[in-house]
Image (cartoon, rainbow, N blue to C red):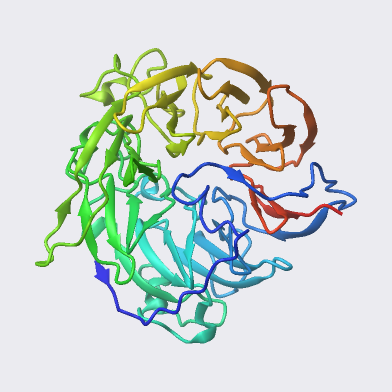
Length: 487
């Protein structure tokens, strides 16, 4: 279902040192130019700690910082508003100065089947901020545009926030000062025919007037059947109105092994923009961006430049016969494709939950999709690569950070963190920042010589990638957001 308006937008320029999306603009490289950052902190004495904000009990969303605000998804295990009780997806807007709550989007769970919206998982997607608009995919598979001010400056566009926050068969709720202001909403289940699985994890890419969104379509609760074989993996949405404009035409869905969790990236190749997308079938695609929507309003198909198969000997059809097979099967890609140093870097392999024990970091020619080199990682990887100063870094689910020569793919060093990585490595100020699902958070020196600067036990799992903005390092555990600043 599509509900939209055409508000008069008054964009606010983001600060140069904000982090308004996950990774660098378009390229998705996890590198920040910030300097003077802390290389350690003390959770007990609060040395180098600016503030700490409580979250829920499941936080898989990477914090995004823009315009004096921090945006992060979590669950409702720690309610901020007494009218919102029970299991919900929660998207919080915090004040950058001290971490206090400004407003929140609270979304009921998808009903009927827990595999559509896994219990207590919360809001897993990462925000993308442009001016006074926030773009997000909710736990219900909806693309939403939110006003960064919440309801403080009135109710823009969409006027049915109360019904949207009300669970099925419950009395209609009314909005309050802590509730989000929805400008428009596109329900991908109805408009695009997707099938949600476990939890939506998207990071929307903006190109001009268009949003590029990975849909999160996947398997059903048997993990062996695709209910929506015609569903798109990548769609294009008008950022002003929320109108569904275009989709891929690659027939990816029948061979999605688990779900479609990799967000798109963009680069300028030979003077022309190209959209890169890793499908849930383990294939990477390069598309020409949408030029203009069809005058008639018809749905357009994206034009493919090339496709790349990171695992060419793996099965490509009837892939679900390999579910729970740890020896053979198809590949899957969770992290984003990263453009850096004129090349495209991709990490993927066997599915971490259901697939084979094999994964790689790959380097591809972005002009043709030709593989340049391959470097073996651990059994599985969910990471987005990070590339800087001739080195590529990738983390795997075995708990190992790999440092690789970005030109040749030769290994330089590895560091075992003794805990699986779901988060990726962030690079800034000559350092690597990384956290594991066992709650270890470490800082290493960037470069060809491995040097551990800090290793902390934060006593809570880490799924979110470390974020850096305006001289502050943000570390999100399952339960807390730490804002770190050098004293």
